[in-house]
Length: 125
Image (cartoon, rainbow, N blue to C red):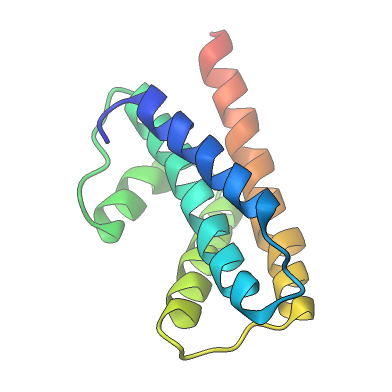
């Protein structure tokens, strides 16, 4: 994906899928954590493109492009989502409903808020 619109469309698709999941089911939580991360990834990628830059093809390249645009806390939330999604995807960690709710409220929501505020700032100037 090489445009702001493509990433925003993918982020919306991820969010719709996330909202369709029943996170009380173990399998759904595994997907939900992964989708939380990819929703954030596509929003971050849209921001990077909006700033006139390419995000690269690897997660490490995207990390390096994103880091200058968000706060240290925001970057930490992004890394937490990334790390958690990898651990869960590769069966190295089980996700309880309590774990998911904590990740959602303590990492995903603050990151989403920061990305949305940054987007508003960038698109209003």
